[in-house]
Image 1 (cartoon, one colour):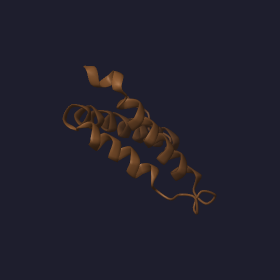
Image 2: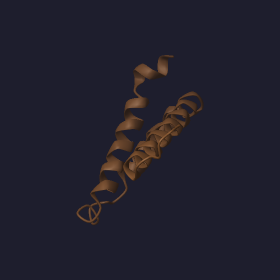
Image 3: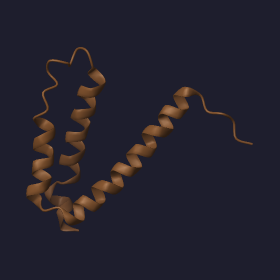
Image 4: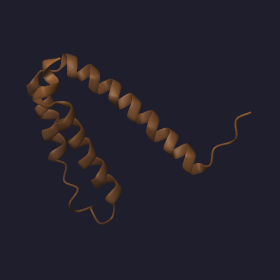
Length: 82
């Protein structure tokens, strides 16, 4: 009974699936990774030099920015108390 997905719907579905997997990974890291590891993760992403390719690939630049924000948001001191 399900209708075939459009290519756009498939892309959205893939993105949602990736987000769910990433959330699970972050939850595991939140439990097992010391603060130093979390800080290093964000630092490594910040060190990626996308400046030269920014105009050519804005999607990658935005993805790196979102990844940094996600790690920093996930690993704020308020979240470490649980």
